[in-house]
Image 1 (cartoon, rainbow, N blue to C red):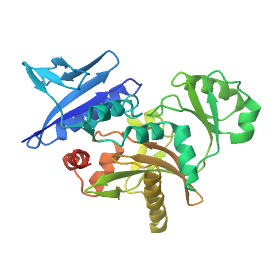
Image 2 (tube, one colour; image 1 turned 45 degrees about the horizontal axis):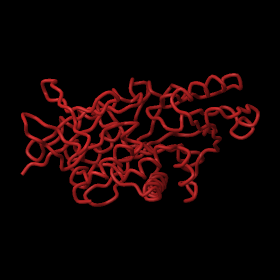
Image 3 (spheres, rainbow, N blue to C red; image 1 turned 135 degrees about the vertical axis):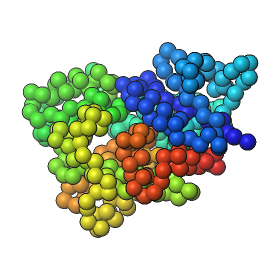
Image 4 (cartoon, rainbow, N blue to C red; image 1 turned 45 degrees about the vertical axis):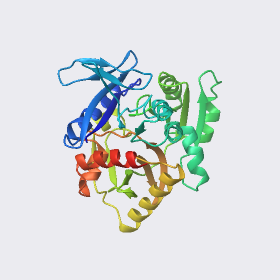
Length: 325
């Protein structure tokens, strides 16, 4: 008997359109023989199932069900394709776990932890994983420019603490640019993170649960003419993504080891894509994405394809792993 799978997409953040694209790719690539797939748009003003004709059916939030032609439909598993809140920060996953509905992501606490850049950094540091020097600010704090620069130096990066797809991030090169960058970040979040600039090669590494084991996917090097791997570089072709990265075997082994260490230190399951800067052959952790892009042009599908894992297989594995958990 085919299983009913809800594919949640959209969300409440600036990443809503990217999430809808990812969710639709999942929908198009799920096996019709194994699953009845239902695209569910989770938006600020509505939660609805959208059928192939564009007709909308509201979600009953009491039990996360839908009714079509007087037939109530419940779900065996939820495929989480929401970038940002409430999917990547764990909020909707806590709700699903309360209802006893299985999902493809890590438990809600792990998702919340990795989404909060400050908290995530505090955990990985305890495991000896190298990071950039950082400075934290909450909205309303006194901003001491001299103190910030004394700690992190220039250039530096100013980032919203809870945001993705590089929204609200600035690379600050001079003192005069710092206040506008802080104001920009505060438009995305009430907490921000200011990090020292790391001068090195940037790589991103996918780690997933695959067929019951933790699997490191082929490493991707990011090369961009932009100041950093920003929105344009990620989604508008302003970067070169080289998979597998042109690195030595020794460095590859080191990166794979630290990627698994990070994944396990954070008690992760499901999908992850983690970014590192390599300085003097030493990887420095930047951040972990737990609902990475899943379109055909996205990095995780590219990495999976390089080791022979097709999109249908990648998505089926995520669902079957969740059902067995």
